[in-house]
Length: 594
Image (cartoon, rainbow, N blue to C red; front, side):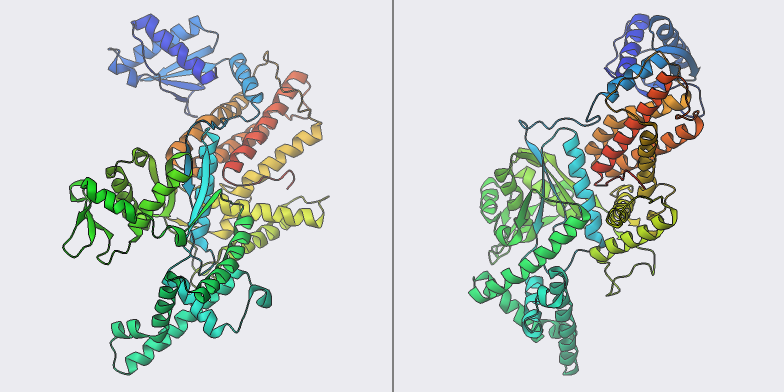
């Protein structure tokens, strides 16, 4: 039983003994730093069951706890808040429990229960990944890690948008202007090469529009009649009919893009358990439309198109099948969701998609519920805001979209410059140093992206993110390396994972233990709220608490009391382990030396 659980149990027993009332739960928080005590029992919520003055009720409960348990050494009542000071023995006993949990904070995955599918990335195969994809990937990957840490099976997936007019535009431009270029012949990553031809198409298309307008066409007519667009549309029709030549070109260029994406994903440190391709899923859902018609969920208009009326649910009418029998994106998403549940042992899904699609997912989830799928209650849209850069900083070569690979390279370069100036890199080989620069740069990028609540838009400042002070990844990484250095210097033996409990602790000792105690609850809360920001800000607070402890307790290395020295080394050891574990949930590596 954790210390927190012991306190809650004791408080319930106190209320039952004094007032003959059995409470289902007692609210307990950490005591405010400007007040005395370690934990605070909230009396106000009890007033629903206990009549009386909250301060007097708190005094009665506190006195009972002090007289009838070994946990409490002192109490202080401030209005409806009962502040309690907990004994060193209780803290140390709980700390020993924490020490001996190898995977502290996390729960073993229950393979017998249905899992969760987390979708993220989902790029188009006509251009490289960009800054927006970086936030998307980091959020989805971290949320998958966090959910898994609570004991649920997780399947990380993406749906790759590998078909459609935009793909044909790249193919057509390469065919017309590429002169047989390949990633090997140009030295370019495949996604960059294909992306260049998407840009090339747009350039030529705009020229054609201008020519047609000069010949008297309206802008709308010119856009529709431009030869390049008409040729791309013809290519798409050929693809849909299975034209061998077009399909071969499509497969070749998509393969180049996938190779490029693979490099970016590897560098970013994200991966997937399953892949879905729009070319395989775009016809899914059409059969479900007939089922929906039969059930009266959908309705057919006189022109043959099929709709769902969601006005009574506060939404609008939504088309699910065009009059010519072709599907819309909503139809495809309905079919893909159903297919995923068939393919995998899952009963819930998380879609990591920008907030511009909020309405789409409200409609999608509601349609699936109305179609009678019980798992549709467990669908979640991990909606996130835009990410922007300070004006003039790290612009891409095109001057508009920030390329993901360029961003990571820039982060590593910035980290290298700062680490060389501030770090202690003696004894590291050049290869180890380069690995460290990469770790710091990516750690800075990931932490800065993830410490912000997903729903908020954010400004990503590359220089600020690599600062070795403040709420940054490098500050957390540096603290981990510092702890490892302390342990190394003292010859700490990690095989002796038990602290003496007959010690008198300082407030700073207790503060670090209380921070460690919160870790399991923070993981669960982050999973419930789909928010890596809770983990990021927890680990920052833990690191701050540790640094305050290290600066204010007598020097650990020089401590003469062997038991006290061992306890504080164990405190260092477990803090480093939790920092590493928390950072891993964010996809961040921590160095041993920095």
